[in-house]
Image (cartoon, rainbow, N blue to C red):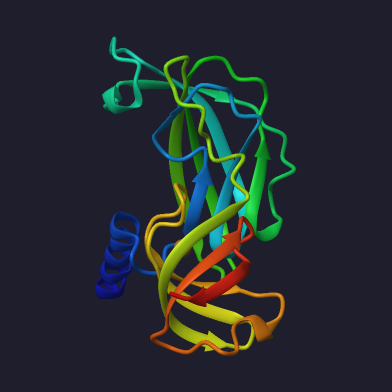
Length: 210
Ligand SMILES: [Cu+2]
């Protein structure tokens, strides 16, 4: 029992730290650790397989330290919870969109819990800062993610790809994508080196040999 638990915890840790294995999270918007100029009107949490959000805690973070940048945050933080509506909860989907109230400049933290398709509890958190010194890029305007990779498996309307970073949003990992029509992937096989595009629902839109 103890051994199982340890292995479980260890593999979770590996997933989050290296993101090469089966990470439950494809990407979040705004990106974790990003400093953005314009306050976002919504956040996105996109899982690599359908999941239900069961709790989202969103807070403004104030730090005792003079440093206001995210990199300067080291635990001495006070969280002021910000109320969200609950429309984003309990929908089974890969992509979850969370509406935000109007945000001032500052640092914000999101802690979420979700239930994966197979009933596993998963959780995570991310942080972003709204600052005049930030960049314009939040990831909200991105429509397609473009990447390269290698086919691991093709089965019906599902294709597993070991991919490098997808645009700015998704780190390198191995994961399964779906297609609306299996013809799109029926000519591909394990080992093929490919270029591909997916939308934010992680549906494969385009694939070609690289
Ligand atoms: Cu991925």
